[in-house]
Image (cartoon, rainbow, N blue to C red):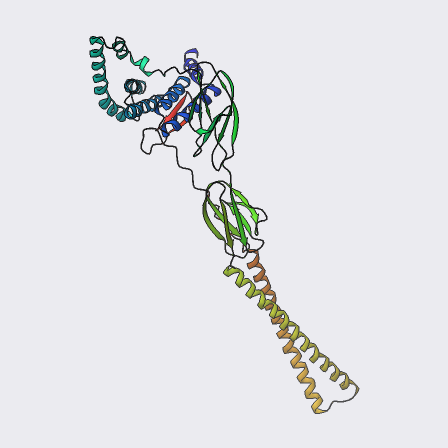
Length: 416
């Protein structure tokens, strides 16, 4: 039992603490944004800081990609050496790496360049022009892979488009920002067009790079709906207001499905895509459904049947009265032949009119029953289509690959 429990205990010890994982994620987010912004040195350092907190071969690959981009854009020899060392470390750390072929191809291109730079450094050292160059060229992979010491700094980032950052009241500058600061708390403000500004305090630790990835809340768009009064307005399947909207409906930026419905009317459905603080107006004039039109027609037949029933019944009572009068006269004295004919005609007419009234009443009852049933079962059906999902975050150095950080049972894994 002790031997069986040992691996589980070791795995529990390897699992990062929540605070440690959160800080690693902040470094990763900042590094991804710095990579997209072309700040490759900052991106590489951030990925390596995240790797120090929660080791992951995927983060080594991302750091290598960043150093390779830095060398290609600035021709920095140190960035070349770091990229080569990190690609090799990535292959050693994960023999079944998903991006093994990319790493090998990168090494095939970079190793000859590193060898040429090392030869040039040795030649310069022999000539006495740069005594320290040879020793620098001969450093091992571990030294090359370690991030450079940069003093006390804040690494501030935000994924909001056009995000700007201010530290301690200084002018706003585009994110991501690496700001050298003194140890201690610092007031950070982050803003972007179409987002609510965020203000926070970040405590800088002496000699360390402190990350802070700020998620800005987008300002909603405004939706105004007019049209058939009393209709219900649903956004992505959730009822939000009635027509006409007394106040604008706040919706998150992005794609939405707006549906306006009223019993007995065809559903008005509109797919919209809104931006931050955008105002959208449309008129939803609903048309009756064929079932509702049929219901009104059947109810009209029922109403006509009621009128016909009353008319036939009234006439039947009138002929009944005439027959009763003639019968009473017959009891008092005999009727003349013409009066007897009138009596017989009144009795026959009373029967026919009574039957007609009964038939009209039955038709009226049936029409009302059908009409009310058509009304009762004429409720609109909403699709409730959800909003389109947001596009995935792209991986540094990968064409169209997803790049996310998620906690597994024993650490953080980057998906490429």
